[in-house]
Length: 141
Image (cartoon, rainbow, N blue to C red):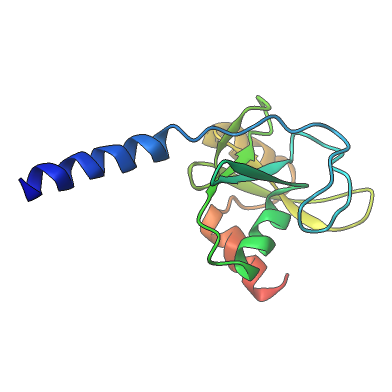
């Protein structure tokens, strides 16, 4: 009986986690971390948890937030730079970029590694993973 109850619980947990979906982000909404308006939706990121969502200007802002709030266990999404669709952060690859408006460094997320490599080559940059984005935030770069 215990095994059956545990199995049912695990199915429920897996189903609940798989059904988390990102919510729409609109231009002009404030970044949850830096409070500046989100101006480029192709860079936007989001964390969804407990029925709430928090939007971020870019993957770097979201990573900085997560480093400062490790207890936040929401599902993390980033915007695929090519399609504009939200994808799970850990499933994307990233190309470092510099915001030409303010000179800040951040990342462009790609769900397609070939497209990411093309962009990286064009920018003379290397691809990085979500773990590398988080590590850079930990170092404060």
